[in-house]
Every structure is written in C-alpha cells, then in structure tokens.
Image 1 (cartoon, one colour):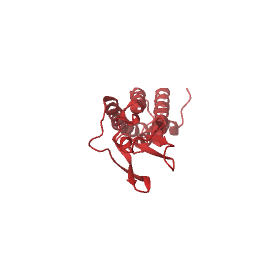
Image 2: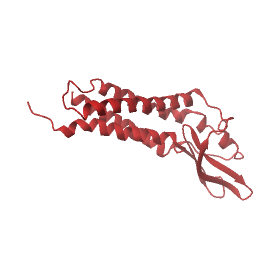
Image 3: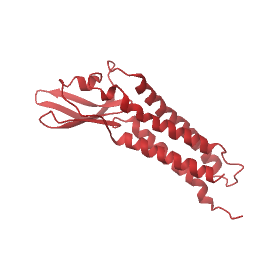
Image 4: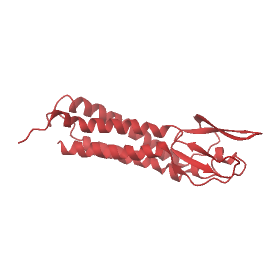
Length: 188
C-alpha cells in the first residue's frame, strides 16, 4: 500500500478556507449590479445581501458614492431575499465549524481513523448553501418598483440585474467547497 504525502491531507482544509473567505464577499454591497444608460452619465448601482451602494441626488445629477450602507427600513425584503441571507449565514457558520474540526483533526494527524469522517458531506452541504445565496437574483432588489433605492431615482430605466464581485465570489466559493468535499472523500 502506498503512503500519501502528509501535505495532501491539508488540501481539503485550504480549499475550504479559501471558500469561506469568498463567502464573506457576498455580505458587502457588491453582490448584484444594476446599470442605467438613461442618465447624462451612465452609472451602475451595487447591491448586496445586507448592504447597498448609497446614492445622492443633487441638482447637478445623480451621484453614486462608493460607500455601503444598510438598506433603509422602508425597503421591502421578500422571502427569497431572506432565504438568500439565511443560506449565506448557514454557509459561513457551518463552513467555519467544519474547517475548525477538519483543521484540528486533519492537519495534526494523517491517520484516516482520527480524521473528520463526515467532512465531505458537510462540505457538500455548505456548497449547496453557498450556491443558494444566488437566489438573490429573484428578489425585490432586481425589481425597480419594489427597490426603494432605485425607485427614488425618478423613474429611470435600469437594465436587468447582473452578478457583481460578490455573486461571482459565491460561485467560486461553491467550486472550492466541492473541491474540499472531493479531496476529503478521496482521502478517507
């Protein structure tokens, strides 16, 4: 029987660690982006699970600032939006937990009997939860008549929602969670 080099046992751990870091990108205000060409100067607005890009309407025009702030209290949060937030939180909490257990058991010992046995299944569950945060595309954020930030911009015509940095990071996070699951399963 051939022996596996010790560093191979850390692949699931480091893959999952990268995935966990990518999960945090969705919490910023750059998960989705909505663009307009109606204005004198075309601009885009960024939205996230918890935050949105602030917009100032002045006499000189509309200024989209680079700061993120919590959604206003009058923002309608629908059930899909709540589900996207919950799935992101589950992915972060469950992912961090399995990384701690996998890191303590996997990188300390290379004995398969002492390693986290259910790690592959948990990594797949976390990948599913991370991917489910993408249901943010089907929420009130993308509907200009229900998005209080977009509705305040005097009936401008906005294009459809597209994934921004946070959404693309959620996809990459899913890939890294699956890679961690595959490596974890192969090593047991």
